[in-house]
Figure 1 (cartoon, rainbow, N blue to C red):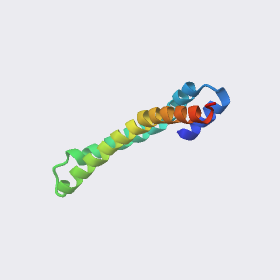
Figure 2 (figure 1 turned 60 degrees about the horizontal axis):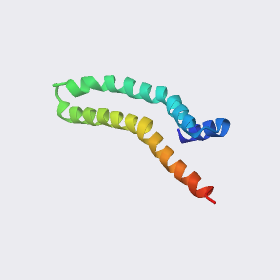
Figure 3 (figure 1 turned 90 degrees about the horizontal axis):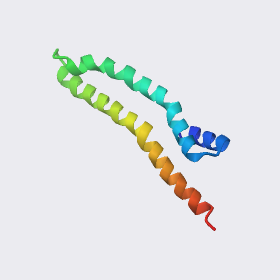
Figure 4 (figure 1 turned 45 degrees about the vertical axis):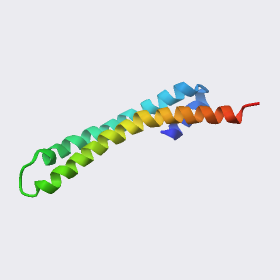
Length: 95
């Protein structure tokens, strides 16, 4: 995503627009990965069969990881990139 933000910024020159475009370009692949994987794990999460005492916590952990990694990828990385890049630009071009 950082590479995409850099490409957008160099072509348009608008930093905030580049962050929005970079996050938007990664939205579909990240959401498709999470939304296809999570329903496949719901049967493991809800099962009561033999061996489910091992599978149930593992499925819950993987689903929680998908949710947290999706939110981190789409929201937190964009915000951090905005803040750190702005500080770096200010320090580099400060007279």
